Structures are given as structure tokens and as C-alpha cells.
Length: 411
Image (cartoon, rainbow, N blue to C red; front, side):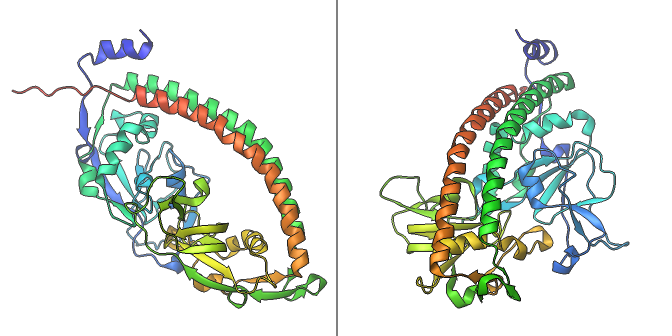
């Protein structure tokens, strides 16, 4: 019998008490009444959506700024608050959690696209226990039942309040935290080692890419290269609304649907029809990955969170070259106002890019393709090793956090 089993046998042999979130604390909203200008030259810090989505506990080094007036009433975050993302294009991404495990040293606020849960009595929990629990499989499986929507999924706070979580004795929580934090640290160490090598390879690729694509600027072009706006050289459009219920799992008779995500090359699902056929560049219009550019070739569709570019004259511009030049350009045009990054068509069409001779474009593409292939070969092996460690952590996490509920006694 391991230590946790001994503690359970001693402290809660008949099960653990489960309580409704609504009985344990209150929910509050993020920033309200803000516009685009509120996020320019701010005087206070706020937690952006990406910080909540990407981290099980708050990263104080990844805050952004917002203007807050002296008499303005906004909810400042506190130690023990648990943030949740409020909506997502993908059902499984809704209500990703992030716990404030360290006391804020200043007034910090939450973005308007997330909501927060504040415990009435934070002494009931080890905050690192909550960090692991709210991202566990069993809890996230129940979160899905609180979500509604078709193309954009939103969390129902009324249903969320009714979710029950275990309140095991603190001694058990602390022992679980020791084990899971140790797993996390080992995974982080391995990831750091592997990604360091990958980072070196990526920097080599980026160095050559940036060098090859450096044609000066419009006012001082190199080698007389002409600069043109995207609307001068491309047809610009946007995807359509495609709901999660429409798409299917992969089989070799279906065509991919791409969305705003970056994992799995942006694949959202598959359809038996397609909207596009040929070479295109697509980009993510809004969300955490706004401005990310992809090269697409073949038969496919895209969702309404993607923009798409079709080269007007392939005798002047290569689509692959277009993708490469935009990949180092779009980040400068992403607008992060109100905590939801955006890069819309009206901005993209005004972006100016250098148009060297087609032969030069092709030479650049060939060189970058070779560099990218070398980096990709290493990168393909990297996720498999990290995933194995991550799955090991998730296995033990879900086992350790699967508590028997204490049966209520009828009086």
C-alpha cells in the first residue's frame, strides 16, 4: 500500500466529500467596458487569453497592459482565483483552466474573454492540487456537458456552477501534488533538452529565411525589387461557418477542413466536399494564433476564422514564396486590442511585400524547403518522446485524482 492509499484508508476510508463549485465560491467576469484604445499604453497589467489557455498556473511574466481609471470598478485578481476560457472554436478547448498559485504583487485584471472562480475558503485546497485537478480528464469530461454552440462554443456558467469537485483532506492533496509536480518537472527537463536542440535548428532556418527574404523596404528596396500590396497580387476571401457536427474523422475519401488552430497542421476535421482546389496561402484571422500563415495545396475547405489568398498571376508571384514572406511579416500587423488578437482581411490587403523575379523566388523556396525538411525530420521525433512522458503524467494524474464520492447519509 503506497502512502496515498494509506492516507485515504486513514483519513477518508468511505470516500471523499464532493461539493458544487457554486457552493464553494463565486464567479466573476473579466474586464468590461474596454475598447481598442484601452490596450494602448496601459497603466495596469492584465492576464491575456493565451496565458490562461496555455498554462495550468498563471505565468506572471506573460501579462499585457490595459488602461484602468482611478475610480473604475474592475475585478482585480487574487491568490487562489481559478481562470477559465469562456469560449472556443473547438469544443474540447473550452474552459481551459489556470490557477493563481502565487500572490499578485500589484493590481492585475483578467481579460474579457475569460471568467474566474473565487473560493470562499481557499484553505480547503492546496492550490497546486487545483492546478492539476481542473485539467484532469475526469473534470474536463464533465466540462463538455456545460458547453453549447455550433460554430463557436460557449460555457454556460449556470451549468458550470453545478459541477462538483472532490475536497480530499489536505494531507492527501499535498502528497498528490508532490507526485504530479515531480512528473511535471521531469517532463519539463526532458522537453527543455530536446527543444533546445530544435531551437538551434529553427534559429538556423529562420536566419537563412530572413536573410534570403531581406529585400529592404519600399523606400529603400534592394536590387530594385518592387513592392506591392497583397490586394494588388492576390484574391482575398475568407472561409465559411463549418460546425463541429458537420465534420468527420479522417478517412482517405474525405477532404480536410482547416481552422484557426496550429496543431495537426490546422486540421479541424474532414468533409466529403471541398471549397478550394489548388495552391493557396491561408492565415488565422483571430484568436491565440492570429496571423499564422500556412501553405495549402490540393482540395480542402476552411472555417470562417481563416482568411485565404489566391495568387492572381503565377507568372509574377509564387504561392510558396508568398507564404514564406508573409510568415515573417504578418506578426507586425496583428492587433491585440481587448485581449483577442486579430488580423482581418482589411489589414492584410494593405500589407506590402517585395516581388523579386520569379526565378529568385523559386531559388529561395527551394533553399527554404530543404532547411525546413531537415528541421521537420528532427521535430517529428521530438513530439513522440515528449508525448510519451506527457501521457505518463496524465495517466498518473487521472488515477490519483479519481476519488470515490462519499455517500450522503439520509437523516
